[in-house]
Image (cartoon, rainbow, N blue to C red; front, side, top):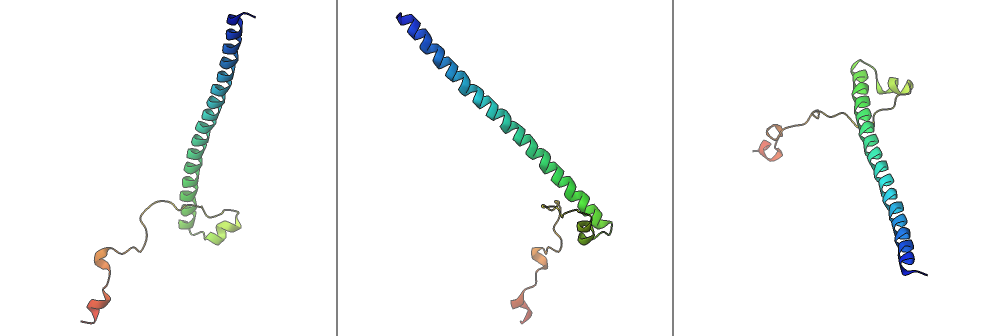
Length: 99
């Protein structure tokens, strides 16, 4: 056997194995990008559903009514200012009341 033929066959085998590995990474990367895009679309859809569900509640429907129509309450609440939150200046002091 010729040494150059053996070296060429070895190089071809290494190149083929490398190509398989690189293609596997490309495929996984493409799936990862697709997954990230789907997660963003899902998050946007969940946010829109939460807003629309809140709009239905503001239109005088109850959670019970909406459930009876087959609509589940959104998993995440819409953003915004929390209700009934006291600021530091509005809190009452128990020790100051008895003085």
